[in-house]
Image 1: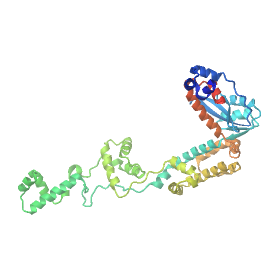
Image 2: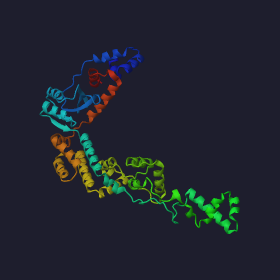
Image 3: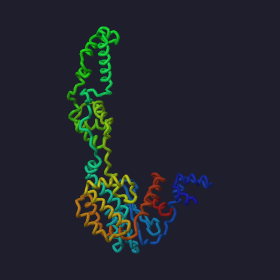
Image 4: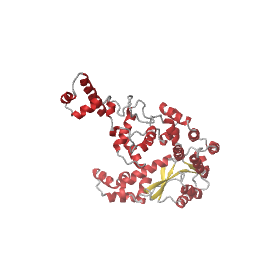
Length: 416
């Protein structure tokens, strides 16, 4: 019983459960009982799946082999070298099919250890590799996305009102000056003297004199309020361009202008962009990212939302290369889901005819492993069950923390 508890829960958790069941034992005892269990005698699989798992991610890797028909793990190997995999396969001559990912060490090991077996490339990894190539291709045409979703913005922020004043209506200081000017001239028209107006309004005589001598309030807008050249003038074109691309965050735009040589503060940038936010023309919508567009391309057209379908249609209408990419991706998806591997040479020829460097690099990889890829697109076998066991190995490793040595890990994986 303690051995079965150890297989399910490992040391610490197994010891706690054993204590509850009335069979008190230490965690080391539970692990020793697991290690003493005999190895299972499994039949030689006809279809075997091969994949790697990490003992220490990025440093130490092993190999897991699974019977694809029974969905049971067959063995764990301490490394992922081609020679180790080849030796294991050579000891089991009854293997007819090897389902694998596309690393060269698994391909080489299967070729040496089971030369008569059919190698099958996993369809999931083929589709994922195609998605990565498609995203690189979309990134190369990022300008097409911007051009499609960009809307026109005013070339210059509204700085003058209809009266020609450098202060627009609604400016706090401008409105106050206009009100004072109107009050002073109304009192003058009623027959009051300037000294009387000074006393009534609580102003200095000089202020009343300036307001009375000005024929219109705009004559008082002088000095710093005139349209003098500022530090921001050289960077306004960049601000307009980034606003048209959908970037409306003033702090982000200020940081970008700093990177381009602007030495002013954040306030002038924010003040310059304020009229853009209140103008009748809304800023352009942010263009979709290459990853978003790639997701639309990789999704079956029937499952796309109507809004996404229309956005994708507008993108493809302005970029023939992305339209060709979409056609190739969907044709490959049809081959993959309907197991039409015989169509692969025609698909490769069609891709070669278009100017899509990223997709052609993907095709180069397919041609280096053409037999296994064709089998993966033709036969019903895949490595999906192996991926499930890789995830289970991760869970078992974490249960045992640093105690998960290879021998103990192998026992728990094979006997669970």
